[in-house]
Image (cartoon, rainbow, N blue to C red; front, side):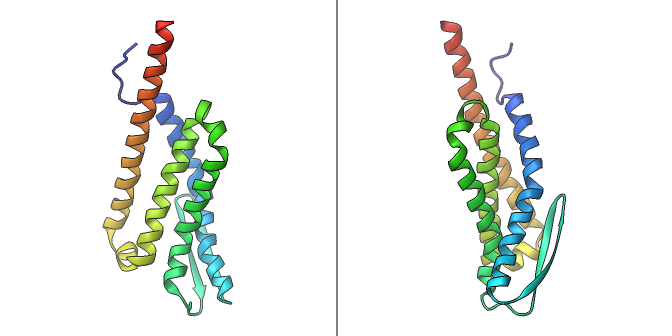
Length: 162
């Protein structure tokens, strides 16, 4: 067995699978955040959801467009971080891949919310905004995978000393 692995394959595979399952769920939550602001502003909306994302358009002019734009990412980030905080005692033992997926999705959605709210033209019209999100998510995943893999390696070394 090679103890010089950078990442634990099982953790990486299960985390990626979990993220793929969470994407459509969190997309719905994201668009619901925008829809909530529409409803609170007395407006109706149309929306669509697909496997890789969704969209929502308010019918009419929104009083606070920044709040409308922020709401999607912020609601999703809050949902991810709250779910992580509630489930953390159960996740730290056997289901760390779920914890890694939730934290990664939370950080990614927080970043998207900030971009969508305060750099909307860049977010909506630049192909670099997607690249920036991907780089952030991949960086967070690499850091969390590396930490988890070191932890697993240390646990195996301790077990072998017994």
